[in-house]
Length: 369
Image 1 (tube, one colour):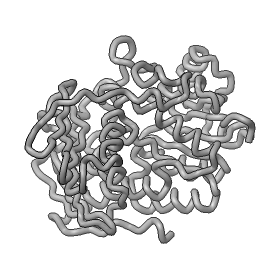
Image 2: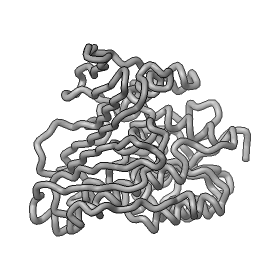
Image 3: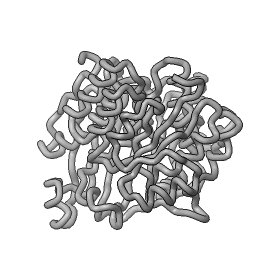
Image 4: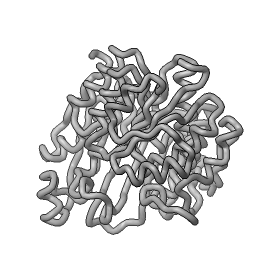
């Protein structure tokens, strides 16, 4: 590998957000982009000055001048493209969710083990400023004993690309599962989930999933703490909410009910509204600005995920920095392949439970592969 990690990005809708981050990272080199639409590929390549361009993903993987692939393609392609990247000897970062079925998740873990390369699911919430704030508070001991965790991700997906239509809610649940498992430091072991309500019949036909809302309770491995998650995608009136609550013996955290209002810390029975700081100072100077402004911001350009997610909590440069740093330092990224698989599998198994009317479902042990 060269002195810098040479990055190739495939998928340039949301993926374009990461191009200038890698270009400004002191240990990265943004060398290649890949997209099937040649006109869009050239437009983006010209805009950011990226010379090496591919319309064929396999050709990109065959390029020896690329060390790592960052995947931002549609959900159905994530697992296959991740496995192909790892098997091609490339480090791999992939946007969420890692896969849409358990066998594909096992395939990612096996490919990571056999290749020896790094795999990281780019879960935004565990690098958002709110999570970093609560994690610091919890790790300091100030919050006391962890007692219960709750997460929710409610979003109206009308107007999104067709492959989203009728998607089972828990198949895209890492934004609310990830922060709970990350904060607890545990893996999910089993899940009980119930589906509620009914979406439009035309949407049900897409994936055979009828539920407007799915809500699950996760049992965590080697822990007496439980975690509850709620997810909705269609036909449910609610402002976008991507949240987590943390209940502890001394101090608890509750996410705001309305976007842009202050969240609350409960010190015993005394509530306190808090302003969450930015954590740009944890990043190399060249990419600090991207916690508050990027390619897709809320005033000039709008990508629907970025707009609905209120900028993803400034997480993008933190994600890129973790991926690059893990490669340079030859350590496991967070989340690594096993953690990424577990967070994704928890949602897949939750939907399976909902389809079985709340039957408990065991989550595969990816550590034993």
